[in-house]
Image (tube, rainbow, N blue to C red; front, top):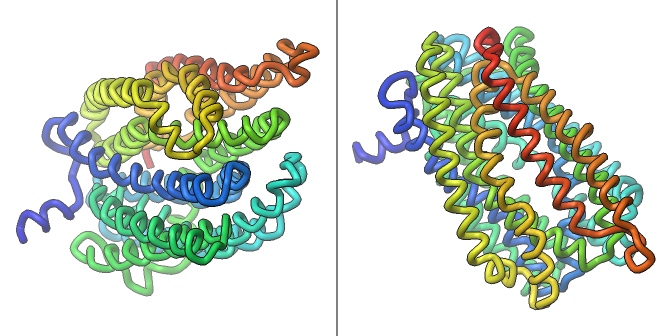
Length: 458
């Protein structure tokens, strides 16, 4: 019983060996991110195997629009994590209580906005992206179902950000595993038994997310030793709400820009036809797993930096940044190698079409080196965000996506056009992404080394 209490207790990162604290925090979060990735992966496997390649393309084509319209959740979650971690490190119970209460208020507001805007904007955006007529109705049905049930998605994402800020990455893992199992069960029931197609996949995801959100709420309610979740704290407070928004807005804008970039590139991807769209979906699903260590270490570095900045331990932040980045590099290198070795088997899970597997594998090989570079980018960006400097990673992201990625993708495709390939060479889309990652990593290292992030604490 004592072991379980210790496992589920918040992790104080302001003492002990930095690399040990970072690793212990990252492992359950990495497992949790794997479970979360299973949401989209299982959806793709089920529709690809039981409905067909066009249904797989439909779920994938809906992804960029879904990511664009949930940027509010991403922003509030990041703002919550940074604010909570710094007040936790500073041992300020009152400020911590107000911050968590206002996270809940902002979650309600954001979920209502996304529900309304998502349902209204989904089909017009799909048409604007020149989504093939053969998958348009499926895409629309999938998105409408997700947006109508977006309250669960909002509460899980934002409240798990609060838990991470408190140093608790284990609870979020457990809740995601439960939700992932439910998602798999409902996927099979709705699609295989009830023949609901892509709408059944979306409904399964909505139900699973609602369960994980409820579990997060119950967990926070039981953490009375650290903060107070009373009525007087769960209401709009301008100081704390604006603090969360100020810190989270750059991350939300970053996600929005990335999603808009994906939408613009998706339009280019759609021009290559259904098979390439399906291959892109498969690559992005495997890509999701390849990126998990990077995102996990990046989030761990945000919490580590936040708690130690709150405690005023800047030397410890710098030491942890180096150790955490080397850990991320090692783990990312191993996972990237495994994907290259077992890639064809992984991609065969999504489709029974050999040509689609081979095409997907060719594209994945292009991206391989980029995953290792992204370990550095995510780790150092996480440190800067945790210290309160969310603007620098935002500007780097804008530079990456707008100034580098889009011109490269469209320019390379244009320059490789031939009579046989009127839209250019399709691999240019992935080459442009690789170059974007490499250049973004170089810029991030320079920005971190300049040290302006040390002056942004709340």
